[in-house]
Amino acid sequence: AKADGRHQVTQKVIVDLYQMNSGKGVIIDSGTTDTYLHKSVAEPFDEVWRKVTGVAYSNVPLRMSKKDLLLLPTVLVQLTAYEDSPDIATGRNFDSVIGLAADLDPTSPQDVLLAIPATHYMEYSPSKGTYTP
Image 1 (spheres, rainbow, N blue to C red):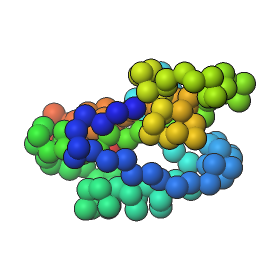
Image 2: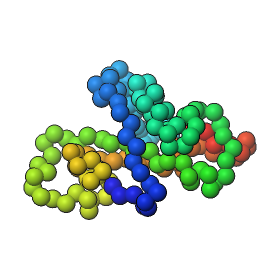
Image 3: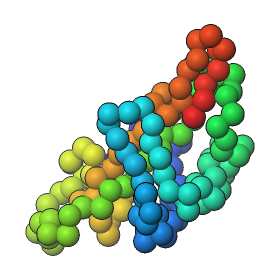
């Protein structure tokens, strides 16, 4: 994973993985337009969102220009690689593999990153002229 420019920085949301994967856990379903994160992610996600955007995260519809939409952060979801994945000591260069954590997380370079840009998590309502996360 590489940033497009120096202005882009990664902000990590610290979560309790056991708690996040309990109950219904996380639902990322390609058959629907919605993604659900565990409620335990809400507070740490909002802290990082507020740090990056300057405002609290909310599901309230917003009026914004396409330019402002494109300034919103891309959310990265890191999916843990299968435990029996090839050993990182093999010397493979994971930086060249698109979609892997690589140097973004040197302790888990084989983890898969799911990148969700604002154009995918903000739903536009043409009748209201608003975007809703």
